[in-house]
Amino acid sequence: MIRKMPLPDYVRNLAVSDVTLSRKIVGIDRPVEVAVTVENTGNEAVTPGSLILKVDGGRDYTDKSLGQLQPGEKQTVKFYHQFAERGAHSMTTTLEVADDIL
Image 1: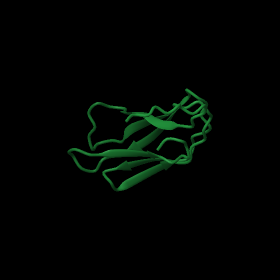
Image 2: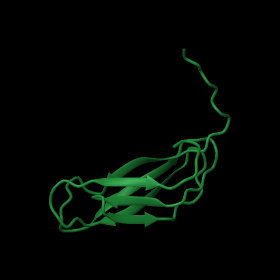
Image 3: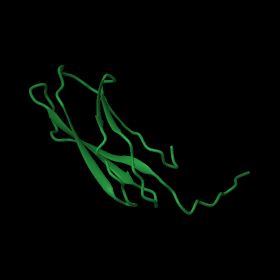
Image 4: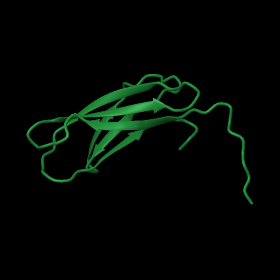
């Protein structure tokens, strides 16, 4: 049995919609800019808390500068990181926000 539920009239939702690096080749000789874009994909204004960039599961960068985002609006936050070792690395972004979609 499949049941179709109606969508709510108002949805509060923010999402990390893009993460880009300032260079295609990243070395250990200088910092790289990490631009993280947050987008309001809902239909109500939402004010987020912190945006966190975690590098290699250890180093955390936190930004609290994001203001209220209107529906369809995007804001970009820039972080700077310099890797100490060559090789593959991982980055994770977390947006702290009380919205309707997890």
